[in-house]
Length: 344
Image 1 (spheres, rainbow, N blue to C red):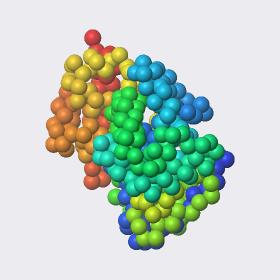
Image 2: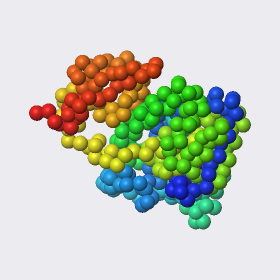
Image 3: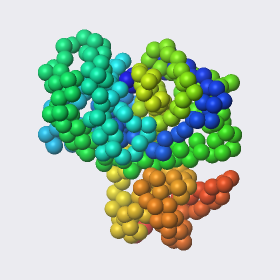
Image 4: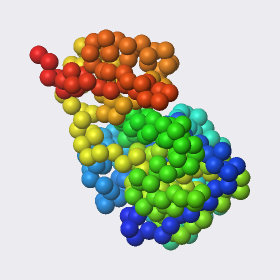
């Protein structure tokens, strides 16, 4: 079960100790995980103390859910996924998997014993009796599972999917930083890089991070996957059941104004001028990115991403510079002007 985020100044501590074998097996997810983002965005909708960067999204997504007639269904999902000290592990079965449908299939294949145990734990935490729908879900009722899947899909389409390009771009930029640290300094350098997150500290094979309760995450030689999450706020998240694949979900901390920049009036004209895919590529370059990062963020073949970058470079809209073993692409001042509709 993931636990809710909290302000690191008032948190207890999560401790993870690594052996050499566990460091060698450490991995970083390839991008944002749609089901993690779905669950965590439900938390942000419930949390009036969420960072200001999410204020515009809360208003826009809330209005879209109401227009779509999905507000009552969303309230039902919030009861299943409350912004509290516990929500069920089965809602987030992935380790940074980027395909929503594959993740949803895994969720709906959760064994009945896990459904029953995790929902019982949820209602023990909330102190409220389980509604009839949750009781049927705990029994593995196919109809209840189908309704849950339909509700999650409908919510995702309205509240999460429209923002995926921004989320993927930020995750790709974060992954680029982590990759450079790992290539230069190995796994320990990768973990030291997380010291930039508030309250995180890695030294001598020991990672400490803010957490709602004191906890030691014991790896037992298994791989730990670090998963960047756009809607993760303040503190990292992990699962309660340590028999499940080990993940540590950490905040991407989008900057205030990200939604306004996404909606900028110049986007449409840029798409008409250079094409939608190239405009999206150019828009992502708030931070330098490699061709592979761009391909992952836009779900393009690397060869296609490379061709787009070449066209933009030849047009003077981006620059490409070698850094270590990678080539990083930077947006130029002209590229920014195109995006912002500054060309007339």
